[in-house]
Image 1: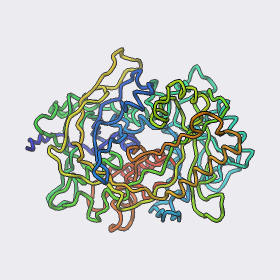
Image 2: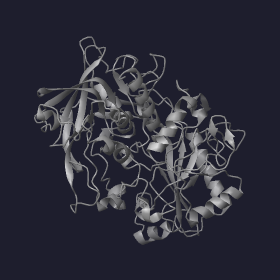
Image 3: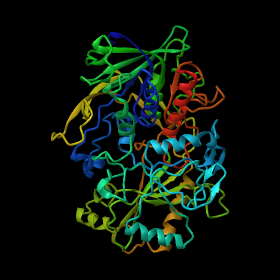
Image 4: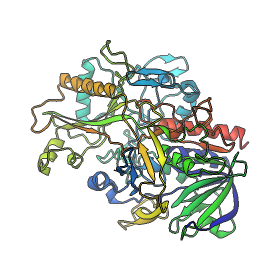
Length: 593
């Protein structure tokens, strides 16, 4: 039975739901100019603990992924690699911060179908990409190419669009193994480029460096906070400001509208545990320190406008769950597009084995886009995608793919002769690849996950296995239906790269067991999720306008990867961050001036 709702007396300029790349960035920019904001995060702060760098805990036990169980299109259980913490998925991302190619904003014909045009161009986004790179302290290098119209080109990567400014920090240098491979593939005519990374490394003065260039980076949480993420770079910069209230362990269950359904008036929230708030101290006190929600009771908070930034899947979930008599199919869903066109990339981790020894600690220093816009075979005039290394690799990661009963010492020996690669091909929008909701009783359940009530101090507290209560969607409440597409181009990309490595002398079949462990990223791997609420000018085929405001409600915005019209073949984080800065500028000029 549904419990009671408690309406608080404080009204905010804005309520921001989620603290990931989109929500954290948006909150930072609104808070810094004094706007009164409430930030609602369903998870706690991620603990700084030695298990952050434990391969088995992170990758085999999924310690930092939710315990939620969704279902796939067939109704089978699906355990998403989704992280609910302050900072969202950026706490466990690889920090590769790419700009989309200029061509990605236009129509591209793929073998698998059409990648549609965005309602904005690369030129519209470019100044915000530059600001995003500054905010997330991106390390990169454009080389020595002469200036081009609009700024700088790249002497490394022919696909790199113009930059109005150079990267704020120098690129990471190669360690010996990656240097050797890069040298040899370049001799074959392959163009390589330094990967832009949001890692706080000072190679000129390692003693002063926050990043220690460890071998537990990439998908690991950073124990020393040297990874640029939305928690450290955004939320912790503002959470103690008097105009900011941050509530952790606070899951939004739905949005409420006025009687005509033209605007959102409030959010309904379940608080788990005694999540410690930060920032302003409004009256009554329980507004700032809400009690745990018991027996289905919820709290209601009001604001002038609302930004849903919960990630492409959960932002769609919130809109669909907010259906009412004026919006029977969910908020902002008169087009029936909410939840549709889910994308997450065709991607695979490819482990190349050779007789050469690899003792590099961190390998994600260079990549290639030579196959990004076209295949090397002129008879196949379609894009393939991007190649980059995986940053950190340990033998435990092979256990799920190795032949059964393979001894650990064999895998550990192979690790020292392996280089892991990450291959990405664009995933195309398909209206049947979608997020939907199923009726369950109850709709939500409480569980425990690693976490802290408040942010860690700079050092370890000495406690281990700290946990916090969180509210999850009930099992099978969320259904993620997905059918792969553009697969032929992805398979060609794998073949092309294996061929390059073989011809360069860096992949052989002379090592026992398999020369290549190919691990396809399953539907559970939702780190690159996007689509579901795409932007556009046509109300019939999109959910959001070009400024990420919903077509159907005047004060509701969706500011995360939900707005993506196409996925491109690069990591989405920098585009999410840059777009959030763009939307913040719009809001401050048009809605909050």
